Length: 123
Image 1: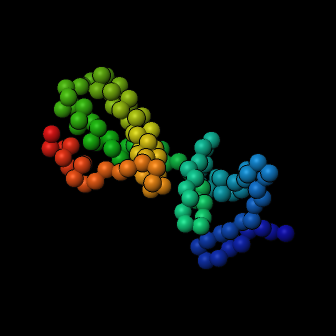
Image 2: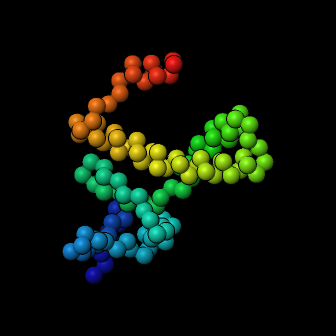
Image 3: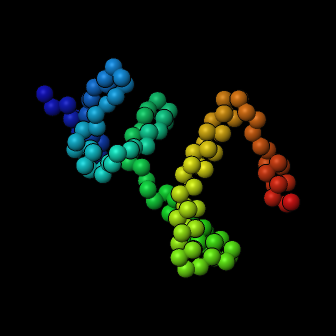
């Protein structure tokens, strides 16, 4: 039996979930999407989206990071080292922000108001 179902631009495959809540990504999907050892798992409405981790997300901040570091006086090898260091901190910082936002959404923590945020900038 072929478990692949095609529908226009979508392709669906029925897969099993083990007793340990594990799934196996079909080889075809694994190859097409260029998965590696880790994936990003997103809860979206009534669905779970599993996709390759976008390694270049921190690169979106690259130009900003470089200009800040140059403004701080870094150059040459020291600039490269500091850039790599700073870029590695982006993902954990974003994860912390998301975690904090989740706590605020659940009412476990009080969120900042716009007034709080802009008052801090003025100081």
